[in-house]
Image (cartoon, rainbow, N blue to C red):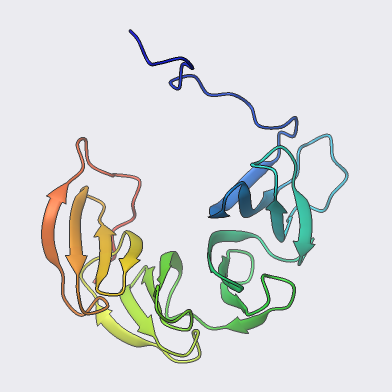
Length: 197
């Protein structure tokens, strides 16, 4: 098998740490954010809060909430950061890149969220009770769909994409009010949790 000058099919360790990184999100070239739990050899608290790498994962530094938050989902748009804290069940919102936070009450446990490309205060969350939307950074929520949940990506102002637990891919042009099927993923996506009505 030929893959070009560098065999891109082989994974390489980015750094030496063996910490458990959760909520991993790429926010720029070589810049990652995450959360999770420390390497067993580290003396850090069990919850890492918000951590950041500026060297493509070779090293991470603590940004905030060390020992407090356990972010299972993290998303960022510019300096606006959203994180679902599995420890508290709160949706944490930061307007300054994750240094300071305010806690919001989500409509249910959050699986994923997507931020509008046009307005970082507009978000859609995928939860245990379906899809909900907010136009004020999570202060208030409006139910959109109670019959589905999954992974979300807001790829353009008029295109929100959902992959459900069966691997079905749907697209919405009205911020999750309705979806149209556009395809499916081979083998399904059974790791996506389905909402219960």
